[in-house]
Image (cartoon, rainbow, N blue to C red; front, side, top):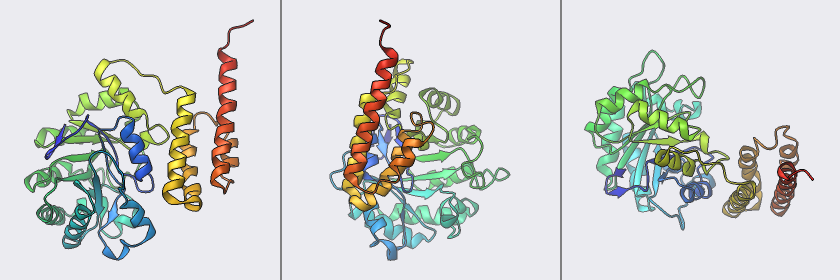
Length: 332
């Protein structure tokens, strides 16, 4: 799959998710099979660029692969400035956020709230595309509510004004993350435009990825919540798309290695205090299928020391491995 001058390793993308797709998680997903990883959205308001949160989101030090940075805002001039700033900071693709349904974003008429104002959508796209020499991509939803699914109109505006690929989440702004994603609108969008279309929403298994690609005709899929706690899903999807065979999850020992590496990198990236706090949600996702009674997570979330976190994970997985070995050992 091609975006501007960049040929991706495959057509599988990690969706930008605020508070999730930081540098440690992006790099992990890239190593485990994602063809493109997109950063957390950055505000176009320059007043917040020097905050610790924004500085962490802008950090691409040592990052491998194509750097795609998402920006959010409602003012065309500020969005253009943000695009230029991020390109100067190493962004190779600028992604415009018109898909976030969060109230704190939408009350500023940014994110998916923009879908109600096609003229503003066009102004922002024109400003950003004209401001930078790198490819500009766009992330949208199917519309702002089920009665107003105007995704096809927005897609045409995007293509006509220089957007080089379009990711579509199969829900409206009003739907938030409730119910099931619908792919009819994505199918219509793909039929209406010629730039690459990426399908997003409820892609949590290789089989679902194949089903969505077949139904919509999309050029690729974007995985968001399906990758939380399962960054190996990209490798599983690619294997299934190539062979039609299901690739089992990594063995327990490898899952532990991945989680241990992830937590260590989160602690190193944010520092011990913030890193310990941020690691908790990732550990919760990784262990959702193992720690069904949530007892370990309750204990883990009370740990305030980075080394103690790692020791606790080591002990937990050793106990899990012992239990698994006992279950599969042949009867005497």
